[in-house]
Image (cartoon, helix red, strand yellow):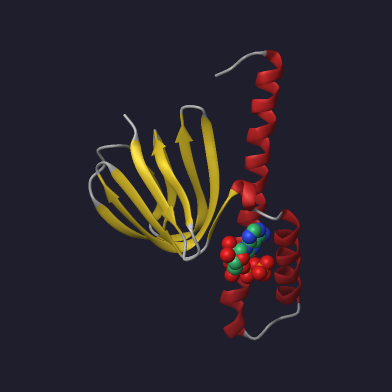
Length: 149
Ligand code: ATP
């Protein structure tokens, strides 16, 4: 039984559809949500959202926000989020190198949390972009060998 998922950012509706399961980064830990889950509200950390669908997984990066879970629907209001296919890997690599460089230069302590958050966002984006690319590559292989899942 599927559960409905809406993922909204300040800029757009990023995803609206049905999934078998969604995993997401709650600030108290990773959560896996199936249809029928007890209602809850949680804030979101910097982390990966996985939409588990019959035809395969979709991977998204999220950086903060809130999630409302109802038994038949998950609504995510993300501060910042990107779908795997939207992620610009070069931009994330540059952001990661910038954060690493600033950290290596002993920044004032009050700047460290923001630099660490930038490091986590860029590392996450690179991970999600690669997972997305891996998903495409493996489904391509399956089509070539005629093994559809
Ligand atoms: P940068 O230093 O590259 O700007 P950032 O982590 O400071 O990265 P955010 O403030 O998290 O960027 O996001 C600002 C906007 O840019 C958001 O709309 C976010 O979705 C988008 N964004 C940031 N990095 C990327 C990326 N690598 N690929 C695609 N969109 C990105």
